Image 1 (cartoon, rainbow, N blue to C red):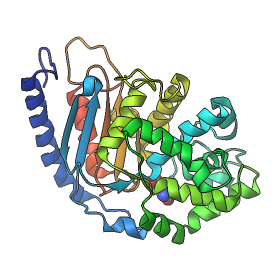
Image 2 (cartoon, rainbow, N blue to C red; image 1 turned 90 degrees about the vertical axis):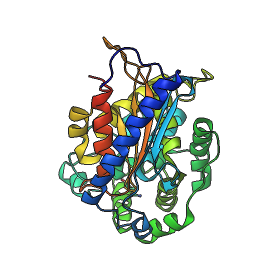
Image 3 (tube, rainbow, N blue to C red; image 1 turned 135 degrees about the vertical axis):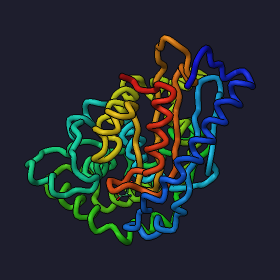
Image 4 (cartoon, helix red, strand yellow; image 1 turned 180 degrees about the vertical axis):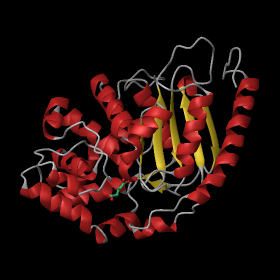
Length: 331
Ligand code: GLU
């Protein structure tokens, strides 16, 4: 699609790219009909299945947004990226990875089966529920507020405001949490939890209930794309090694048990959540010709109609299309 030099600084290129993205969102919105909103957390079932929105943030303040960009939704599993980063910042990467592995599971995110069948002494990775709950137990603090404060501090630095917890979703998760409690008890029994089970689960449900937007997710992606540095201020928001480890985990384990396919066919680090959000990113790349966001970008997507693995169905298709049009793949 893109020939010659694309310079998002010129009004013409900007308009032209905006038109393309608007067209793609219009086209892929049809795919929302092929998916279903999550219902196992009752409040999530209230989402509008036809919503689809995307925001792409590049360096130099370049932003292209399209579709339902103003919808506020809960961050769900994308919070696992943030708690992993904060746990690594508080404890060190090797401490965290001594206790949680970095291997994809090929199983559903909330699977209990593989915990025992592979006779593990540590959960597979920080992005399945067992691993994420273990990571949450490592966060410093006596209660959920103390544990989550540094997560909110990090988010505030990245998105420029202090997000809030959606109390209705938190309550809904808490009341329907039998499976996560089962995972919690299993972790407790195997000695993997580093804080009280009740506090750990409350923290976990709260982190999943943080409100966000596609703009926020794009900002998170942009900071990761830039190895943890804010491209404008050059401030180090996430230490480089932690940012890189996080991206490797996003690429290998970020899209539930569709992670292998996403890495193969889309080729960029991403993490999704059951509310329909996806955070994705493209690092700077060297190409024989110019493409939009060649210096790297963060991408936030929202589309609550999910495929059977728990990823936004239209969001994945849209990302795949953009990645192929703009040659975003890291491979
Ligand atoms: N709160 C959800 C759960 O633990 C998050 C799931 C997800 O987004 O993958 O079941």
